[in-house]
Image 1 (tube, rainbow, N blue to C red):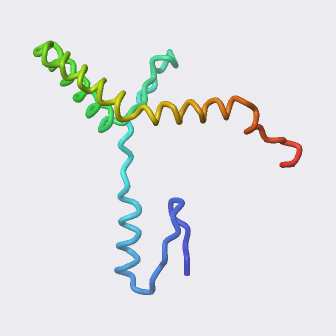
Image 2 (cartoon, one colour):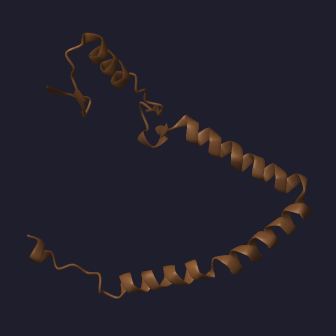
Image 3 (cartoon, rainbow, N blue to C red):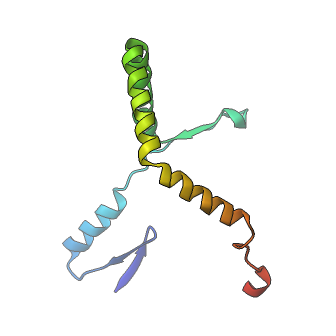
Amino acid sequence: MFKRMNSFTVNMFTDDKTSMCIRRERTQITNFWFKYTHPKYELLSIRFNPLTTFTSLFIIIAFIIWCIVEPEHAQYAFLDLKQNITHLFTWLYIGSQDIRLYSLSGFTSVNTDLLN
């Protein structure tokens, strides 16, 4: 017998211990999003995932500190990186421009009358 729980389809076994384990696993999913709603101003309300926000913030701040502490080394590293990207990924740029021009040319337009 199948039962719908939290938009998941769970196979309910005859053994109560197994079904309780399945139910417990499905209900232990936690929401990591932080949400603050300002009571007066909607624009001051925020919603973010702290894990991804603070991880990316740490990486960005570490990058900025590295550029401030060792500017000459950072400059040479960026020049080397720029040359490698230009040398190795020119094909990706050319291919992406072909796709962009093809999509803008009108060949990709779909007649919506045929879909109805």
